[in-house]
Each structure stands twice: as C-alpha cells, then as structure tokens.
Amino acid sequence: MGKASRDKGKRGEREAAALLRDHGYTEARRTQQYCGRDADGTASDIIGIPGYHIEVKRTERARLYEWMEQADRDRRPDEVPVILHRQNGRQWLAIMPAGMLLDLIRAAGEGGEEHGGEKNHETGDGHVSDTGCH
Image (cartoon, rainbow, N blue to C red; front, top):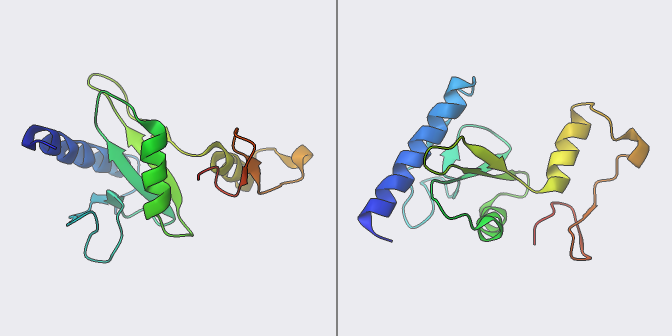
C-alpha cells in the first residue's frame, strides 16, 4: 500500500471517529496501530464504543465480504463487527452481519417476537451462524 493510500486511510479513521463523537460517542478515537494491533492488543480502527469492533474503510472500491471477514477475525467474542465505509463525495455507511442487526433490533424491543427471538441466522449459503460471519 502506497503512502497516499495510507494517508487516505488515516484521514478516514479520523473522519469516522469525529462522526461518532458528533453523535455523542465522546470516547471514540482512532487507535494508534502497529502491525495491525494497538497497545492493548485490539485491532479495531476506532475504539471507545464498548461492544463494537469498528473497521474503517475510506476507499472507492468496496470489498465488503473481505472486510467483514477481517473484522470478524480480529474482534473479541463479545464484540459486534462493524465496517464504516465511505467513498469520495458520499455519506458514511455502516455495514454489519444481518443476523447481528436483527439481534440489536430485537434487543431494543422493536419486534421480532413472532420469530421467537432465535439467535441463530441462516447466512445465505446454507450455514447457520450466531453472527452471520464465517
């Protein structure tokens, strides 16, 4: 990866942390990573939001499944993997496994009762996963 690409990634991480702070997550900040992990051993791009592993991707070309596999691999077992992605001139998008989104909606008390509150979700390839990630 070239210097311009790394610089764009760092700017994206700062932008994403500022977005989160602007929405009340005052502890959100970019980690200072070395070899993919920061001083406390985490690999999240943004820290300060407990329970979430946040990867930031500030690029024109989306590789969603590759990014989600990275986030799922690097997260702690109690963290929800989230990708914050933005292309030039576009809004930030949050990407996460659909099964985890449904669990969050259900936990917020927004429906889902007719499905019995099940925690396992089909991933689309015939597998059942607690997270929707492989």
